[in-house]
Image 1 (tube, rainbow, N blue to C red):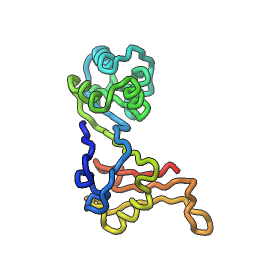
Image 2 (cartoon, rainbow, N blue to C red; image 1 turned 90 degrees about the horizontal axis):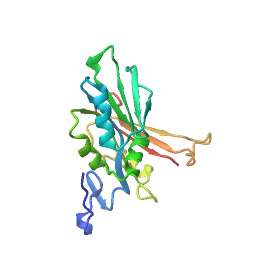
Image 3 (cartoon, rainbow, N blue to C red; image 1 turned 60 degrees about the vertical axis):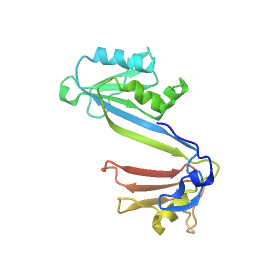
Image 4 (cartoon, one colour; image 1 turned 60 degrees about the horizontal axis):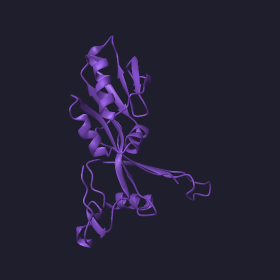
Length: 196
C-alpha cells in the first residue's frame, strides 16, 4: 500500500465522498486486525513459516479462535488456531491490533507485512482498517451531519448512532460516541467512534 502526499490544494481528497471542502482526510491509516485462513496440513511447518515471516521465535500455548480447539501464540504478533478433529476448517491466523502494533514496532509496515504473507497460501477473511483523526481534524458530529444530510454515499441503507446523554438531554462529551454503518453480518461494516 503506498500513499502519496498531496502537493497542492487541488490534489487533496474531498472532506466527504461526494465533494465539499478540501482538507486532509486522516491523520493515520493502518490495518487494525488481520485474520487469514490456510489449508490444514503440517502445522509444525506452518508455525515455522510464520516464525520466519514475523522474525519471531517465541511460541506458547494460545487461546484458540472460536470453533477451533488448539492454538499456538507466536510471540506478541498473533495466534495460529486449528481443530485436529475437523481438518476442513483449516488454520486460522489472527493478528489483533496489539499484534499489528508489535509488527510495526519491529519496523514492518502494513504493506510489507502483507507482502511477507504472500508466499503462504492463505485467504484473508477479516481486515479491519483503522483511520485515526487527531487534533480535531474531523469531529464525529461532523460525520453524523454528513450522513444525515446525504453527503455520505454508501450502499448501506441505515446507520446507528449511539450517544451518551445526561438526563437533561445534553450530550455527555466525556463518554464518547459511536456510529455504525451497515451490519456486522455484512462483508463491509463501518464503526466510527470518538474515544472521548
